[in-house]
Image: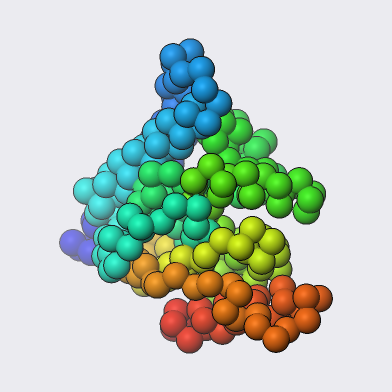
Length: 255
């Protein structure tokens, strides 16, 4: 009986969480960002303040999920992120809340956002104000290079979509192209989640019998150049992509 009541409570908390997130995103995008633009004239400073506001908002939402018992989060090596400036942060993507957790840890996070979110009524106010659209390759590379030069940390989920349990990692080659062309270091983050929660194959209302537990592990930096030595330029992107797929395959397992 207690387990059933707890599951019902987590379903209600998750439902309210969706509403809270949507309302919060709309409020930030329309009201708070509007004030930031009015009182901040410099373009870069405006973007940094907006990104910091999103960071604090996402950190608050993670606290809400922890407080209501929707999930629990354990962190390892997060202090390493304090060293990062102009770094590409990469992570596997098992759950819908991964982005919220990661950006909640990084005050100066930039992010490549898929086209669908630019059309979402609630989310578009945030992504248009602070992040990079996933557009044509040349324009995307220029945007990423500018973001890194400005001192931001670029958050990328190499799979381009949520991971599928018990399936091998398949990374898009765009990450490798960006890393090689910008020369930026990579900061890998491992995301472990048990049991499955808000995965690609589950509906949002399919709440697990037990509270989801997230383990976030921040690893040491990787220099892309160290993985593509003595490799032809035409093969460099493929070589780095294969290396990163193997890196996560060895460290993040799904039962």
